[in-house]
Image (cartoon, rainbow, N blue to C red; front, top):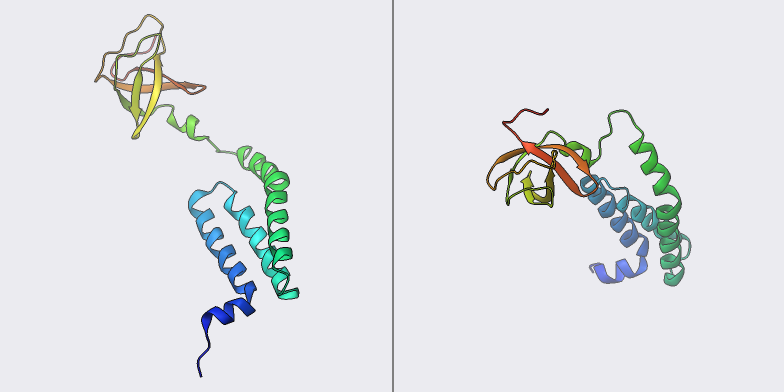
Length: 158
């Protein structure tokens, strides 16, 4: 006489919630964005409710959703602020400064396109009078909003 897995899972919803929490926590390690871990906390709360009230699936879902949304709205902003204020933290945009790339199109004061680390960016030269021709190797001088300010890599800065 074997155990039917479907029946067992139906009787033990906590196992589904716990598996979901584990998978979300593992996925968080890859993303490092502190979103999936908040959803994992909600799944853990759902598992707790499933242990106490296994037949109240609507309560399990409600508690899981409330904990997830609550932690996303209240806990995540505080944690992200702490992470961003840690010594040595650099945003993705800040890490681009000093990176090399290539001009995909002519880069002038009105704009252009570059490719750095496999990503295309809108760019402008650091000097408004400078024109960087397509195919020129460039280096990122700074990030101004969503625009990379660049200069030809083998030229000297003023």
